[in-house]
Image 1: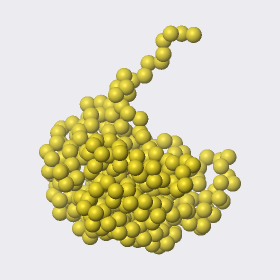
Image 2: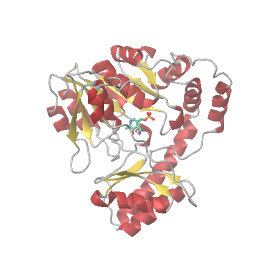
Image 3: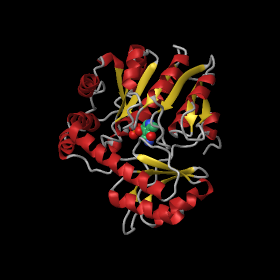
Length: 356
Ligand code: PMP
């Protein structure tokens, strides 16, 4: 056998592999997964039926153009088909966006800490990741992000609400920021948790996209719509952007099961948004209880809460796990805990009580 190994790109050495939230502990008396911001409700029967029907045909490739889903999305959001692109989860679409805009010598700006995939997909492209620290209150520092723009900037991610802090940027500050971004720099509003927002001052990215050719909105069926396992995301952006996204898409990257489930979910939106409403009530209960216990909790508009635990982060996550709940530790920084089933949230609150 040859001693040499294939030549891989040297820069991959320094790039971490994306780490998913841990699965629920197997074998425990109770095992709840609050580590990946998933929807705790099981699939709706109608959505399940559409998936089952599509499953009888999986010897065939899916519709590569996602025509049925694109039509539904076009109608739902009042945007032309030429302004839409789908992908393998919104992380897939984010990767398509980077490929479409950025390569070696270019810069991609985003807040940090934010969604872990941003540094990975940016560095894989060969572009330079420019991370702008959150404010001490864990909010995007949009002034500093605008200051970070250079001639090399090609793409800016604004994660609203931000993962893992749940914090938001509001209309006036976002508009002011967008006014400062040159028209040839693409701003991606990552709204994976959009449906959980109740603060009326947070703008709908789709409104902003309508007014600005350099704004693109990223959405997913993984969270509020409960289809994390099926991998469907989409972008709404102006014609040149959406066309570029279709070029950088993985061919057949959205299965027919996923397409049918997404269509059925859009048609069952009222019921699904009722579930989101219940999770939002549960979020308020959890945040209020944590604050009553003396915790400082940033105002969250997503389906998770952020506890800044610093050095105690890993110990806290281990204590939760001992009680049958898996949460998401960011060692040295904090813990992100998804709002899940009431029983699971109660266990987390009990552990939080013991940690004060
Ligand atoms: N954006 C943000 C901010 C996220 O938190 C996530 C999921 N953790 C995603 C995008 C990607 O979700 P998906 O690929 O399932 O659509």
